[in-house]
Image (cartoon, rainbow, N blue to C red; front, top):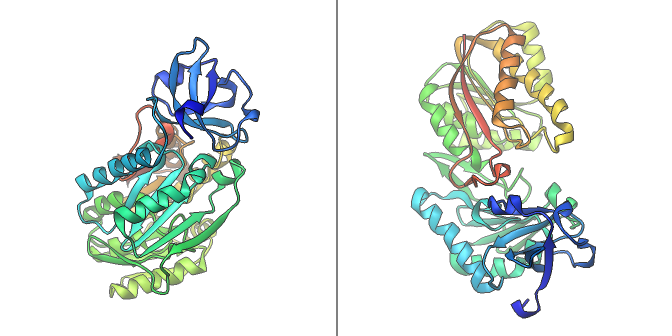
Length: 393
C-alpha cells in the first residue's frame, strides 16, 4: 500500500515501543482495531501525532500490531528484499556452507511472522501471522530468486495461525519431495521430511548444543528421550556412546532407525516407541543407577502462561526420574523450548527435581538456541530455548 494512503493507528501507551519491543497489544491502542483488515499495513502514532513506526495489524489477535520498521518507508518488494538479504548475510558470517540452518527467525530478523529453514536443496517456509500471509507471494518469489532451491515447502500449520484467524495448510510450491533432503551435522547424516515432520522437519535450534555435548560423552550408556529422528542419539553414538532413543511417534522412530543405518550406527544407537513418562517410571521401578548420561529434550509443554504451573510439574517429574537413573557423576542434558518458562524458573524447577530425586546436582553449562535463531535483547519472547548440562552426583 502506498504511504500516502496508509491508514493510521494511535497508541495510548508507547513505553514498550520506546524500549524497542516489536509488539503492540490491543489494549495499547487508542482506537479499536476492529475497523482494520487483518494483515493491513498501518502507520503508528502516539496521541501527540508523533510517528512511532510501521507495522501490520490484526483485529483478531491479542497482539494487534507487529512492528516492521521504525522509519517512514513503504513495505514493498525492495523493503522485504533488504530484510531478507540482511538475514542471509548474517548466516553467511557464522554458518559458512552449512547445509541446514534457519535462514529467517521471525522477530529475531525483524520479519515478525516469518520462518525460513533450509535443508540442503529444500526451503521450508512458515507464515504464522496475517500480516506475513499477505506478503507471502512476494517473499516466496524473492527467496526463490536469491537461493534458487530445488524445492519450496509451505508449512502453515502452527497454532499461532489459529490465534490469528488463519486457516491451516501445507503445500509444495516448487519441485517435489520424491527424494527427501539429506543434511550433514558435523559428519552425521540425517534424512529430513519437511512436509510431515515436526516443526519444519528437524530441530535446528539444538545443533550447537548437540555438538557441545559430544566431547562430554565419549562413551558409556545412556538415553535420548523424546528423541524424534535421532539428532542427539546419533551425534553421541558417533562419539562412541551406546544410546537408546525413546519417542512416542512411530514415524519418528522409524526415521531415526533409517538415519542410524545411513550412518552405520545401528549397533550403537537403537530406538523404541514408547510414552516417555511411562518408560521412565518403569525404569526407575525396575532399575538401578546404571546410566552414564541422559538427554531429555521434551516438546513445549507450556503453550500459554495459563498452563505454566501444570507444565512445570511435568518438567519437574521428568527431570527427577532422569536424575534417579544416572550413575554418580552422570550427565543430564535437559531442555525446555517454552519461552513462558524463563531461565530462573527453569533452574528453580531443576533444583526441585534434584530434591525430589535425593541427588546433588551441579550445573556445567546453561545454553540457549543457536545463532541462526538470534535473540532480541528488547524481546525476551525471542529467547525460548534453555538447555542445561548437569552433573548428577
